Length: 421
Image (cartoon, rainbow, N blue to C red; front, side):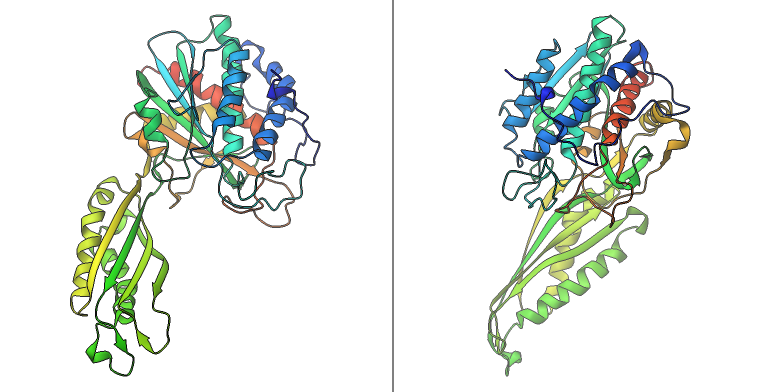
């Protein structure tokens, strides 16, 4: 079977020169710097193949097969998740296990870029950089296999290629149920950050991303003519009260240091301008940086909605759906990956990451074992306008792949050599 690594790299300005070992960086062991330089075009080809053939959440079968095929060619023994759309692969031997995670799925967006590797699938695009995450972890696995063959890997590294990060329920619990964290003492991951220049990484201890839940409020009551609102429950007025009052009250009922944000994204009520509807609904998100506040949020939000609606005459049903917990980076794990990133790229290329109110299901792993996620700079030099993830035109400076492989190889080796984690 043809290896994905032999695919054409489809020349483009984004395939700028493969990054050399940065000044001030420590060399990778076992001549891996030379190996990585020789495989740069092949890794870019993998990224472009995945980018051109995106698969949505829970449909990542071909992407998982590509990953498993390349790992098997390298002499490793990957195994599929029960559904076949994710891969787990151990490298090396020993009782000490460090896990590295990448996500495989794309977003339901059109790809609007004019590039040779533009998505060939309607309404599916790698607009969050998961193609980059997958390629980097594959490169890390192939690099570490070189060390393992020579008996120079001081423990086991487990690669977790996870499906369905972009969907609720997400794929991390499936990986955990399949034994992905068995014997694991620490776990690490990176995420594309277009706000950072390529060649930089952002590291942060403590809160990194927010818990992200969904809340839907359904109101019902007597409708009627807008000329006689006193004979109705005036659902539109009641919805307005919920829209304004519940987030404001929530701010006053939770410690402001917990970082709680409640924002409505959808509201619907009625059709006629002169008729008060009998039903209406709201839907939005609740995001929280603090684990304890996140655990208490469902009951508090439900109570606040009921309290606000009580005086309107309407009836309220609140549907609170758990999404993902907050990512809280472990202090020691953050120090390990910060040191590894400094060794991989040079200490001046490690910066403090900002807190994001976005959600990341990497948090499920961190509820089981200590670990950390970092941000990998992917900003394109000279881009006409700043890019962000989850935009239809999202792309990266592909030199980030080489930087990401270096960082995660150094991280795996550093974590295996640190007895405290």
